[in-house]
Image (cartoon, rainbow, N blue to C red):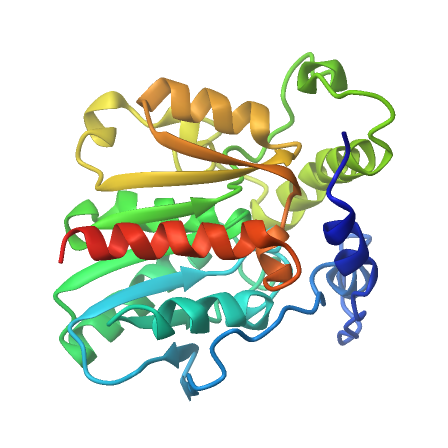
Length: 296
């Protein structure tokens, strides 16, 4: 087994995005940003319009008192709201709920904990502005960590957290070995994807974290959440891809806190960005929609 051929083909058709030249402490940030995202997805909800307000993009069918805030991934230093725009449109189209995607400041222009608080303040501002009474939050990859970080700041605001192939800690695992993934040969693409993500940890760490930070903070290592803090959190759904460097951390996280986790076979990290090309992307969104509808 290896990554699904449909995913490989879709990812091979990515369009490289050019970014303004930006070098930070010897890292060519513009170059590595151009290597993230740019994948084509299919718009399964073309009737949903997007409205831009300040630093948010709003997808809506009309007046509602419910909202899901969407936090995009990209290693904290890359990506943008367009990466999963069609996913957000699909959710808005199939629920009576607004979807608000937050265009937060990327590292290293701003770092931890500024970005976390920027997202939190944006959420509070929009809740007050539109009078939302039921609030969900979702995030993919680094955006999933940011989403849970925001929930940890004020759990009482949120009703559900959806974490898609989350970054759990901004640190490489000790004594790591690719043998822990039990890959069946040759798994050429799966191995390459896993190794690429492993190498990205150092970049995330250097760009997102300031020189001085609390290494034991639960906001940069979700495994450090205390049980007494976790029981205050709303229900969480975690989604993971079969072939993903972060799976070992995800398993530790879900096992520690008994969190529901769904694995999608044949998928690699970031597969929501190719909605319409792989069935798994739509299945994830349908699972999200099902849980949004459960309570109503």
